Image (cartoon, rainbow over all chains, first blue to last red):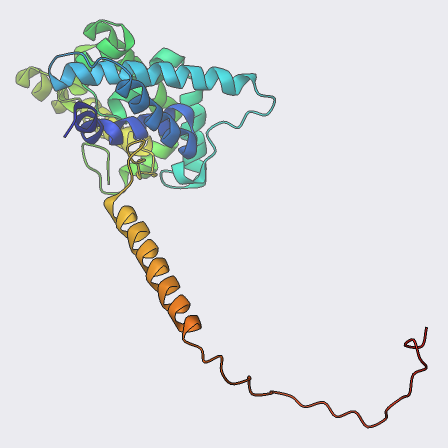
Length: 169
Length: 114
């Protein structure tokens, strides 16, 4: 298995989930996930442990997501986070989650999504976003507090159903 | 950030934490509520679409097999159709499938009626 294939096997699911929420459109998320590995295949892959490579991969992913958002905002018609496939529980919940995420700053949203959706550790996120691990911890905490308030209704509903600590059913 | 929130976040994120601080945090109802709310929040932000794309430039092996099988079938089928056409007997005229009888003959002037 080549280095690119190994990286792909270990990370494509995380990247895809991150893109799903970061750009809000499933087909764009698929394309962007592939774009990450197109870039990787044209790059010299840094030598290091898997965790360090993950930070590098998500740095590429974050740049692609930022470019994608900017290009989308230049288009006359902007469709924000409305893909049916992205509805976590119901259409209402999905729309409210998307609105709450869209209201965050780009950096806070990326840090939060890398942690909660992609499952990265603080060090990986710090590497991907050019922050210190302490700054990552603070941003995640602050974002959680903000979303806890904004999505209190959805959280209360979700509490009634069985849950896993990972957040995946 | 207060310690209750910090230790609960660390526990939730699989980061190092102080067990006694966590015990203290979870002895408080507000701490327990926070922990459960954050797990619920994690659930509701997960995207449902979990079918990631395939590696660019690579296709599953079954697609190659299917394409090869289709090509073999086309080649073999074309060969047999060609063989069958070549073995049709050309010494006998074909059997008529329809007979048209002309009852009223018309005499045309010389030159074909022009």
